[in-house]
Each structure stands twice: as C-alpha cells, then as structure tokens.
Length: 86
Image 1 (tube, rainbow, N blue to C red):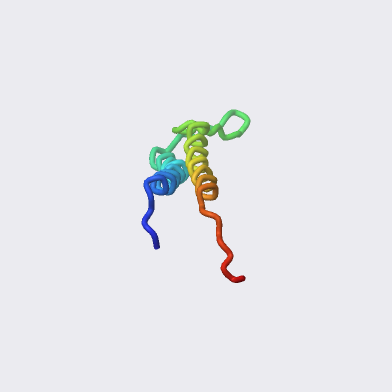
Image 2: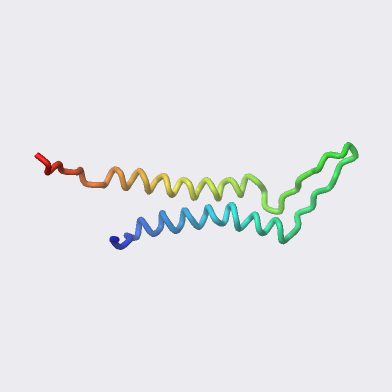
C-alpha cells in the first residue's frame, strides 16, 4: 500500500473524525449528561438537546463534505489509465 499524502490524511482522518464526533461523541455526551426530557400537560415529551441539533448536523455535514471533496479531487487528479492489452 502506498503512503498517504497530506491531503489524504486531512480528508480521511478529518472527515472521519468529524463524523465520529457528530454521531458517537455528541450522542454519548447527551447520554452521559442526561439531557432533560420533560413531559407537557398533554403527555408529549419535549426533547431539549444539550448540543443543538443544527450544530450536530453541521459537524456531520462538514465531515461528509471533506470526504466528498477528497473523492472529487482524487478522481480529477488521477492519471488516465492506459490500455496495454492491444
């Protein structure tokens, strides 16, 4: 296997890290901190997140954006394949 370049390391580790933070990290934080879930008079549960849902979504989307950008860059910069079977 070839060594990873700096761009590959940033994209793979950065994107993967952001996805893990956004899903597992913030999820565990919500479980450990025990975000309150009060019940209204009508019996509906009001979910109050410790970390706002839009912030969590942005972290996950940034990780996916890094991966997508890396995929486009790697396809564009890949040298064309040569056919030697002729």
